[in-house]
Image (cartoon, rainbow, N blue to C red; front, side, top):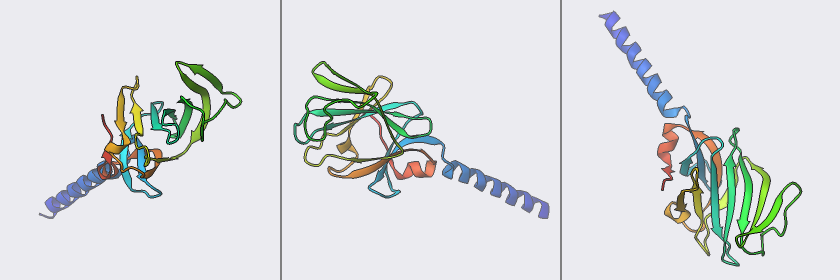
Length: 176
């Protein structure tokens, strides 16, 4: 009898340990939107190393789109590699820095070969002009408006991190 009880207790302990591993060990890499300056996950987009994504916002002064292009680095940093815009103005670069390329094509200014590395980024959903978008996919085929997930004016800390199943259940998975 004692032997059966020990086996049952051992099996129960093993099952609880496996369940804990499945629930709490990070396994999924994601672009995580943390609410303001907290560890509260508002939303996440599953990504892999070397995936690209874009954040498009409408400039609040000249009301044209600005496209910022990023790649997920192997160490989970975020690298900005290009910016595309239509109008010079407040907050917009007027030329490329050393090592970058500045071109005008198809009616837009492109600054390429950027090497801006971020361990995290602060991003605000537009309040005055709330048309921010997130684009991703091999051919940039997926697009969602921030307003589908966030309040206008809300701000977030973006990080690429591995999430556990438990953390994933706390936030909303972004999908097309």
